[in-house]
Length: 432
Image (cartoon, rainbow, N blue to C red; front, side, top):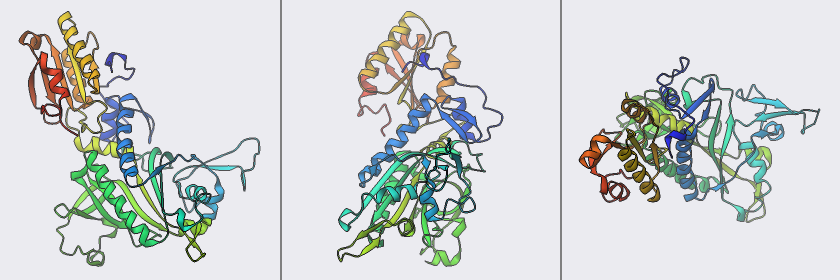
């Protein structure tokens, strides 16, 4: 993509009312636009990164048997009333609206804007589960959620409107559920590793709320985090501060662990639902004896934008964003310094060759910008690798290759540059 065609622009300063580092950098780099507190638009660069994260999650969910659907964001009150969660005193994050023209929708004209999807998912699955032969099933979606969040101060990591990957498992019994639960836990660790957060992300014991004694969070150690965990980095285990007690440590066999107190961001969670919603909404199946049995459920969530914000927080340096290759909007930033004919011809030829070779390239072909402005913008954007084409290099027959994260610099022969960049065994481009 040619940068001269972008409508989005970089900014030297972040909005004064933006306190979160991730949002400051994402706004300055032109990845997101802030609509209001806790609400962000994703611009072309930001959307490319968000979709990269979503696709990593999608691949890992599909690998364990997940089936993708898309449920509506408008919520019928009926299933929520059946579960007891429609009342604002029970669920205080609702955004609600009303139908016009006096239309009645079950018990009134009031509708909800989805904050989660347990109830609608269960009601839908009643039409598809009748027998033990129909189970297990694993259904997930990427869907917009709305939550009347009072703490929308962490940039894209805590917002009032966001896309959530929520997966729901439907099993015959707890044993079958537990086997899948562990598959999801392993898949989540793969997701965070592929996104570049694996070294800092820990499966964390947490409260199971009303569903079970424990659930699992996936917490990424990060100074911008709102949670506190106790972590043993060698054993790769952690405990949320909310459940950190001696009797709990003895029951997870952690009373010998070397636990250190850390701030962290919750990037995912998995927890048992048991038969709470299936019983309330009548989701049952006939077992082999012909008895009606409530389906045993689990819920598994990841917020892609929260992962994106956490990556920004963990990798950014004093110059700007730094993206791992797996989630970067582009693999390479081709920067043209100068408007001389030789420079233009060389840069254009490299851009064409690299694109034809299948590489995702952002080409800074913007005219009349000083070299310092272009290089500063390149640092801010955080694309993993940069290839600089300029007069001085062309005179020497080379182009400059720079790795954003390490600052490593190499001179590549002009005639061989494209081949070296496209060859995964040449050792120039980092591997995912």
